[in-house]
Amino acid sequence: MGRGWGRGQVKSDSGGRRFGEWSVLSRAWGCQSGEVVFAYAAYAEGVAEFPGLRTAVPGACSGAMASVLQMIESGRLAARQSPVESRHMPCAFPRPASVAVLPLVIVAGVGSSGATAAPAAQDFATRCAQPGVVRCVGFDDPADFNTGRGGTSGAYRQNSGIFPPSGTSDYTRATRDTSTFASGGSSLKFTIPTNSGADTSGSYFTNFSKDLSVQFGANSEFYVQWRQRFSPEFVNTKYAGGGGWKQIIIGAGDSPGAFEPSCTPLEVVVQNLNHRGFPAMYNSCTGSTSHGAYNPFDEPYGAYDFKLQNGRPSPYCLYSQGRASYFPPVGNCFGYVPNEWMTFQVQIKTGPRVGDEFVDSYVTLWVAREGKPSEAVITWGPYNLSAGWSRDDLKFGKVWLLPYNTGKSSSASHTTAYTWYDELIISRHRIADPAR
Image (cartoon, rainbow, N blue to C red; front, side, top):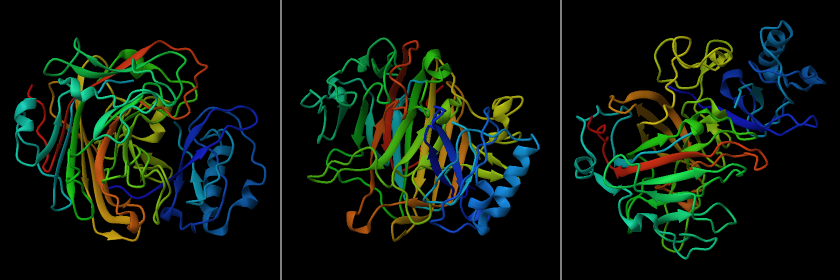
């Protein structure tokens, strides 16, 4: 099971070093919230100096930082970039930084922390007809590609639809594709053109139900399944400046008169973090009492390592394997495979609300290659999911499909890439794998 960790983000220093993602140690080192300390990234290229690092470390974290420095100075770790300043968690420990999506399915219920066994494989229509399913989107109906009022607003304040890339009225990057699909006669296709910024292609969103009646707060359980396809260019390109493209954001649902954005306190996100080539996860756009924003589901392993996909068996999916390979035979991360319809399923089981969190919650991610059974990739919890202020009463009720890539440089040229989504389902019970 995973433990809670915070994450800070490194800003480019005067030497122009690239943006990077950093893990921030919380309870493991006994650090006190609110302290600001410095640390340097491990297992990465680059040269950095250590001005004032030792004296800047508060007593509670000095042992951890001394160990990091000793490893760097002995040559076992390489120093990287500039120090991290974290206001949520004090001790920063280093961590380093393309795709079509198939149908998405969300299922919900209430139960224990353990995930139920997967039902026998079924086709899309059969999965949609199962008890507990609250919404299915096959991307076969023109209405699935609703652009609302058009212009720069897109489907704003609508129940579902498409947004163009921010500040544009370009609807050519999120389109209906009748030549590539997992089932039916079409899919949702995102185009990632050269010289595009962070919002490369716009986004698709849908609430869990048309009348906004289906949402999940405390002591609830639901599942989201989708299938996704990636072009080789999307999987293999490391986009300059980018922190890695997202696949899905599972976030707050709308309420009458209030349209919730993609960035909300309770969001759970699946992302190709730092273009490593495999899905990782994080929680919250704001942070909460127990952890900061963008809190990664990275489980400590040994004295200095992390499991980046903690559901994977030996030799695991470890941060340290990045110097050689995250994939077999060195590592065992479950990576993206181009030119096939992969299946992804997320379970979220919330615990009771305490303050601004759903405490003792659980999150599980399963992934399957085309024609293969799904495998557990991340099993996270008990964990305190951010819930936002009690007065806002936010509940899980909307999903966003998008290849958004924070920090991606619009001045960098690259080959045009594509990703597709199909068979989106939302339901109250675990969803079967697609029929093989």
